[in-house]
Each structure stands twice: as C-alpha cells, then as structure tokens.
Amino acid sequence: MSDILCMYFSRTGNTKTAMEELAVALGAELAELRDGVDRSGTKGYLRSGMDAMRRTVAPVLPFETEKPLANYKLVILGTPVWAGRCSSVTRGFLKEHGHLLTNVSYVLLRGGNGKCEEVYQQMDNYLSQPHCTAVSLRAGSVGYHFWQEEFLRQTRAFLEAQEVRD
Image 1 (cartoon, rainbow, N blue to C red):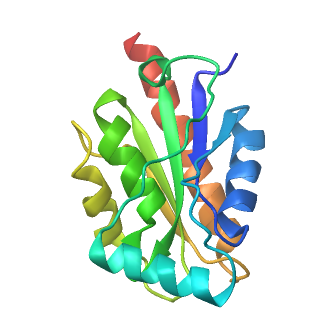
Image 2: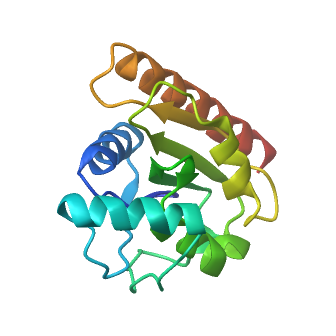
C-alpha cells in the first residue's frame, strides 16, 4: 500500500497519461475523478470551458482509494487547465475534500504556452495550507519530459524531508 495518491481528472487523456507516468515513477496509487457530465467532443469542450469560467461544479462521483484521504503522506492532484482555471471536476473535489488533505502537489496539463501559476493559487484556496510541489506541463512540447523529471525530483526531495521529520 502506497503513501502517495495520484488523483486526476482527464477530458482528453493527456492528464491521465501524465498521472499514470508519475504514479509508476513514484510507486503511487492512482485514482480517477469523474463528475458524470458528458464532456466529450466539441460540445463537451465548450461546456468544460464555460463551467471553468463560471466556476461551476457538479458533484464528484464516488471514488475508491486504498485508505482515507487524510492518511496519505502526499496527494498529487492532476487537472487540465480550462480557461485559465483548474477543471470544474477538480474544483468540485477540492471544495468537498480539500480540508482533508495535508500535503498536496499539483500537475497541470495545459494547451497554451503560459505556465499557469495563478491556477495553483486558485486551487490552494480550498486547502488548509499551500501546495508542496507543482508542475505545469504541455503535452507534446519539447520541455515536457524535462519538467516532469524536475517535478519528480522536487517531489522525492519533499518526501525525503517528510521522512526525516517523522
């Protein structure tokens, strides 16, 4: 049983792929977030963007983890960036469960060139303390693997520091 949980929402599969890679590299448990809303195709793309701009959330469907959220040393939350915000599915999860999370890291998947640091701050609003590590990736970009490896390095350093404290 892992002390690291990788949770994600993915509309197109880019976030899913990134989170699967990170979960393997860290030996982490993997869990998908869903809200039951049809987000496929052009209509789903437009709906998702509008939900993000309006900060609309639908209830997150039940998910299964090996242990309670509060018992993980680190929860890595993966989300696509929609209209300069985290996905409404991720926002719904944070609104409902953010208070249970002690140590959180973020993995953002974006389509544009901006790094999206403001999205980290938006997500931190739902937590009792700021995130530990974060990365903003662009699928297919030249720097994707570099920044993914840098995130892994920072995350491992954070986990080692946690072990020293315990």
